[in-house]
Image (cartoon, rainbow, N blue to C red; front, side):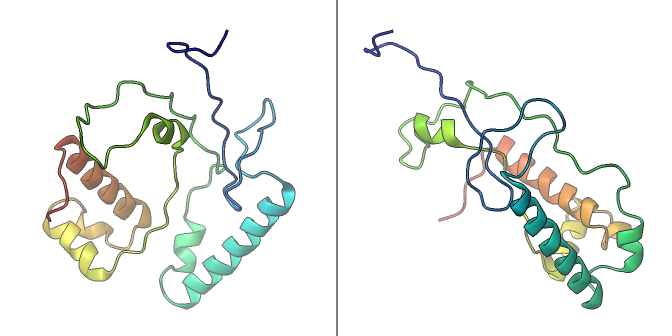
Length: 158
């Protein structure tokens, strides 16, 4: 095609390394590739072990939390298909451009939440008080709260 007006070009979205965040060409087949190279995978696992040891020693996690964690292999969920049905953003100057939307990738966030935040999630009914120390339950509560805010199109108060 000539690349003129009205011509659509496909843009390949490549994954970013979970450690160094550089884009890479994933291998074909097998489980989803999260790292660009073995050195990044090794660096991640080394840092992960140090973090877990610190979390246990500081009381953030217990050895039982680690021992009773998920037993299944840690693989990524299948990537969500690219959505072209974005909500109408009108003339909002904060709206993402098409190029920005094309470059967006799923992120795995590690967000600290203090005790008061956890208690407030319980008070508001997003988190079961029996699950205050359950990281997965707290993460699910934050995800559900975020999704509810997004579905209502809530905006920060100015």
